[in-house]
Image 1 (cartoon, rainbow, N blue to C red):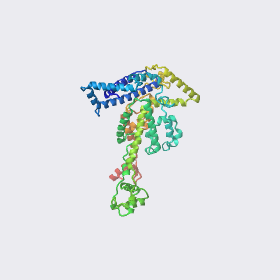
Image 2 (cartoon, rainbow, N blue to C red; image 1 turned 135 degrees about the vertical axis):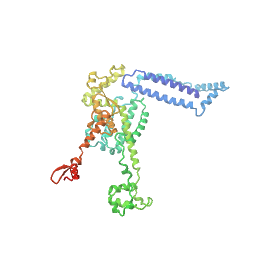
Image 3 (cartoon, rainbow, N blue to C red; image 1 turned 60 degrees about the vertical axis):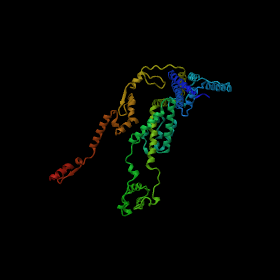
Image 4 (tube, helix red, strand yellow; image 1 turned 120 degrees about the horizontal axis):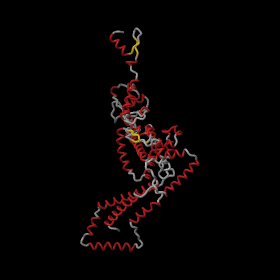
Length: 501
């Protein structure tokens, strides 16, 4: 058994060697997509091991049981030679009892870990559809979405996989009252779990826990102010859930209570915690039975069963909204993979069965060539990559206007490359959310408007024009005098006051 100080020294050595191994891994040449993912996974393994060793080092420095301090006192006392020979005896006895014990040095272990880089082709498990982290595989969730009858309805036959990839994160367009089904929550949980696992596999060095922790703090603030997309803050439903009390002393009979109507009686019953269903006469009779009685004197059968009420509903809404916001964040992180997936699906749909088989063979050959060829792609103008992983031609880059950048102030000064992406973003959730925060409907009137000041000015102008189009009785209501002359209401009243009619 090693001494406390020897363990401490060994852990410090391991930390230093792990740091060197991580540096060597990060500066190593990585040209293919697979090499990037494998390298990040190796760095993640070394980093986790480094964190564990650091925690052990800190525990030894804390020395809560005092063993480290006792050992230092023992070797620094006057009988240090006795302590030395005692430890030497322990070492000899160990190797005497274990003659074939071979200890692999830490330096050799980490050296082998770095040298085996080229032999580890598949460190992470991906499906065939994911192509080792190049594409998303949402086929299972697509079928789950088609089975959400309350949400998809009869339009399921019109939705294909490509349309789903474009709109699967548009939760804000789904009505709130259709989001409380168990199937919808199960769908969100499955989608959230897949995206989180995919990020861990593709981007293992991303501090996902810290991102989610900050996201939950921001979510609480957004929830309180009603800024969560698709979940506006409700203020009008408070009275309907809590009810409005009613003074029964001012009523002399059940018929007088019934004259108030169904809704008013229901509100008064809810305020007292009573059952609020039934006909008008039943509600009036139930409320009349409580007149002049305290809560203890009322018949228990009149009370409604408590199920958590509005607070339970609010917690359920927050849980669903939080999952949607997390998915929004994950999709922002995986935006590149999402775009690549849509392009891949479009290519597959445009090919015949034979062409798809040939394409799969070409992809396999390209991947094997990528494993052998480690040259960095020459891309001095930083052009976007095509489906083959190579830069697109410059004439195509300029043809699509990708050299032109558009800034949208309403989207938080987001930058869009090319007119196609710029026009498309007006119908996406980010722009719709920005318009909602300004209190402006995202209609066709505001197409191509990117400045907040311009949007507010146009909205004021539209409201003024709409106000002018309203019926104005003073100018448009017509009156006829005793002689048959037709004038508007304002002129008629002026003549009448002057006694000229």
